[in-house]
Image (cartoon, rainbow, N blue to C red; front, side, top):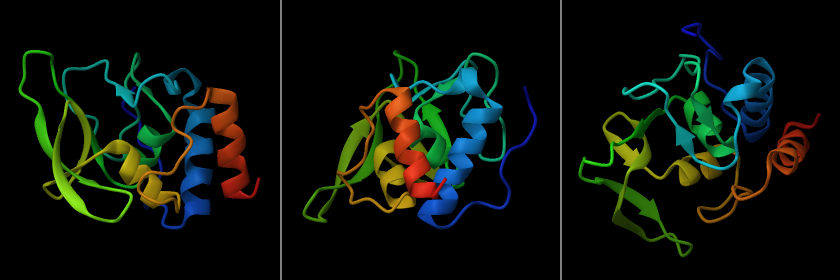
Length: 144
């Protein structure tokens, strides 16, 4: 699947949640809350591109993807990437990850990109919920 998705990028938490709901409805087999992102191809998933068959994204992965971030998954034989994280007290630090979001050379945790897009604090969210619970929360944020 190489069709495009949401353009321009949603800006408000309500718009982001609504875009995620639309994407999940359009690509139901690509929604899985058990992993941030699982790529079917050996290449990163850039913005505006629908996930190829076999790719899955959780709500946080969709939020990052739909707001202009490229999703990256490193192979097991690759070194972890250095990324920036924000702690609960607002302090920024370097960390390492094998799955992350990248935009304009900046590498961030997928959950933190999604939290900012949906109006949560850096350590808030519903990332460990099941699919049904995540959709309920997204509908609340979207006002649907």
